[in-house]
Length: 139
Image (cartoon, rainbow, N blue to C red; front, side, top):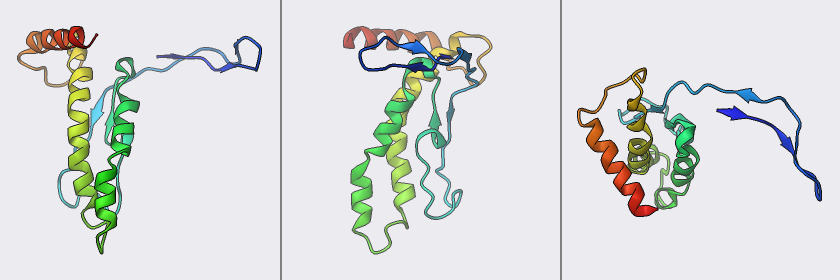
């Protein structure tokens, strides 16, 4: 990923204010916090603490926003006598469903590259073809 800082003034053109810098992306990560007691009570992981996506696919901010708008889970728990008691577990169950599709869309294509670590899907070609067809339908 290449990032440059720019400054834009009213009525003027954008100007580069810092040198261009490269950032290497090491790996996509999806942490499954499903085991009871693996987190301190009341700690609610969101965003990159749960899943981190290769930025080339543009999924990370979308998933973080979808996690943040799981208001129904938060609203339901706010009415309970001990709202934090099961909030984390219920939230993470909902977050898993939010993450599943973007994870598939962004992690499967990475396996085109031999240096990608992890368990390659046995039906990689089939999954990639299916994703291409889905993209064509939505385009």
